[in-house]
Length: 358
Image 1 (cartoon, rainbow, N blue to C red):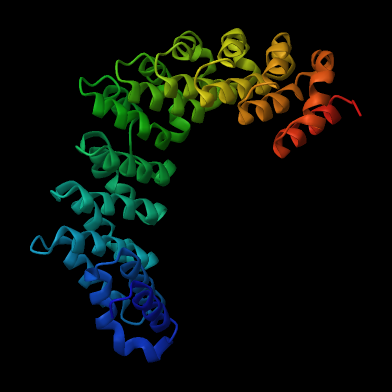
Image 2 (image 1 turned 90 degrees about the vertical axis):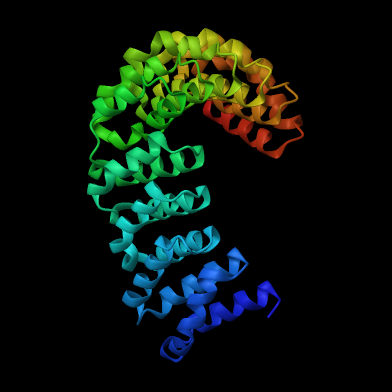
């Protein structure tokens, strides 16, 4: 059948037949591995998982296809995706997925394996942490690195990673290794506090990607990292790369009033040339609440910006400024009554209500 939609519908229908559909298992397996359409392959894999019955034998067949280098990369990647679709029945194959992640020479296949391990989450044995970390730090593909790092983070406290290992990786000569280490840092959970100093140092890394990732992870740590991050977060707010400035503002938003020393810098960033930076800066000021009330005027001025997201975020931030924002009730009222955007009008309405203005 040439139609992708028809083949997809057929696979789904077989999956709903229960025992009656078992006679089409071999055809479904072939579809899951070799169909030219990813949509069809996914539908066939899910149908096989729904049918159950022969799951144990099927998982072994899929695992064999995954490691069979005579198969095309597309088939091996499809085998990884089909394995994960089998649910907990595929957890026993996490080792096969991990071996593929480390050894396969095709980026598409390694990415499918890493994504599969991420989908399995806590079903992945903690003993595989070392291989996942190796991929997160050293794979030549940033996509594979990221997926492996996320798989480690999904393991949470089960991940067997020492914080010293990542601290050292954050100082590696290879920027790709440093980036992978920053992306993996949330896997430490409770131990991450011990590594916040290394992350802060990564904020001044020569690679913008490392700086951005370090800022993102500091945001994950929140107030825990505030005492150590002050000076370098200030530098990150001045970074030439907009993604780094945005990430730094987001970190400060998570730290709230504990980071009020950055309020003046954030106020200047409300006028940044990058729209994402502007909105993140306004949001961070709002998270500081009355501690940043001295900068309420900047937010009031932003209510007249051509940037819709900034106008909305500014109104939301003013609602947290307390009495200082009452001086700008007129601007909020104008936003409530006249702004062209519904979300901005709603945010201004809520801000006025929070301030006790009808």
